[in-house]
Image (cartoon, rainbow, N blue to C red; front, side, top):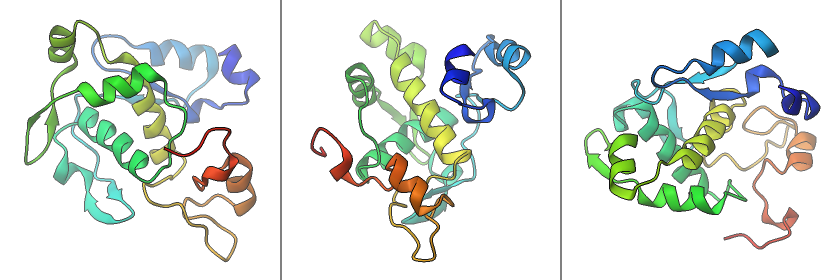
Length: 178
């Protein structure tokens, strides 16, 4: 809570994993305030549009939320809209297997943990951050161009997009684009 307040992050822009029996969100909301984004990985994928280039519903492609979020990470990455992923998260994103198609489903966290002897916690945390960016901030994979009228496709002003480099331009980074 203190870290989030120091960085002026409001509860509605913070995501928490509510899968299983833990209810960290209840504790955080009591201490910090209501509005957290609670993510349940095992639930049905949302009806959100897949990407700017694919108007189909995510629920038509992905069996569950975890598969949707991991492919959301892939989609943002393919448009160069992600920078600075931790090495461990990158490795985890590359190692989870697809177990079913039509709709896609990834192996469970328990199956991955058993196979690799480690849990994909860092990739899950990054996926939750992307869920917040997609659902609460309106960011969309492929929406990197700004509207000449002064609003970005995500609804943020051009000034904010430039300040926070929301447009995914690579000239604002200390390291070259991948």
